[in-house]
Length: 401
Image (cartoon, rainbow, N blue to C red; front, top):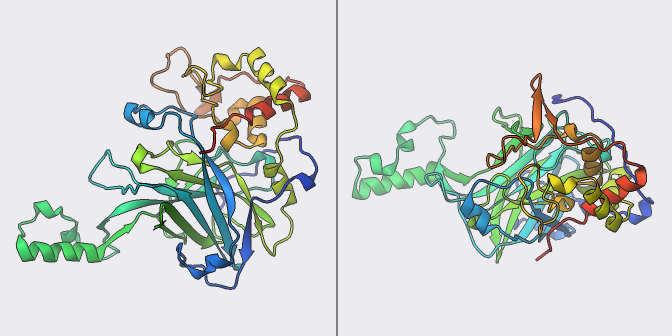
């Protein structure tokens, strides 16, 4: 197996009895072939759909006035997610409401497509030290499968015929000859925007282009809903999903609101129970059990320790460019990640530094090529206060529409 990084750093977290936690999704064992599935495949009649909530990602404010205005006050969205596996391959479907259809067009820079992504952690043997959601983190990589609704474009498919890569307006063809040219481009073209990436932290996302990844993602309409599907091997050179339970995260983009990159709706890590496999209880517990603490006391502790001085903590607080925004952190961050951020702020350094922020307030410093957070280390807090703060931070999330 390709080794992308070293083992994870263990981070402790307070949990309660396993009886309080359940897997959010069950990957049902089937006998069907899963190498090529879409939302209309019969296999989904055997699946069990679960609700997964996707929250607006608001860690960093984009430098796009129009996009920010369109997404002001976004609410969370509930998606329906199902999974099946046959011991060799695993497939997911995610369905979410979106009354408009937005298609990405390669020749326009201000038109964005609707889309979805499914993310896997390479290592998850330490459930309380999973990678940072969305982009992974140093020494803790993720694999991200992305599919967007896209306009059909010419795809050489290895044929190397460059004559059909010419813009139709730059040809000397007319009438029937131009129609024949368009038909050939359409025949050789593709509207499949599937991409797969590995990432080990911000600005490290790298597309897999060497053919070492085998996956199949599709996006289709089901009434007013988008339905996205992904099938992939349970084990390849990047991840091994043969386990009692695995962490998976989901994201969707709304092209009508100029959604792209970090402007999306995102779930936290969700536990997926692999039917027929043993184990996974620790992961299910870690992802399904709320932090044990007093949220009201945690809010007071956040104020007393000056967190509001750098972060925009709640959505109603004034915007603050001195540190990442926390208004929806409870929607897509696990209790383990929140704890790690308090006791070891440099473990995951979110890039900003927002260009609109004051130059005297850098989010991080660089020492020997490594980013070090300027956030205070709160490892000195007593356990009760730490639990209270985490419990409060988990309440920070948008209302579900």
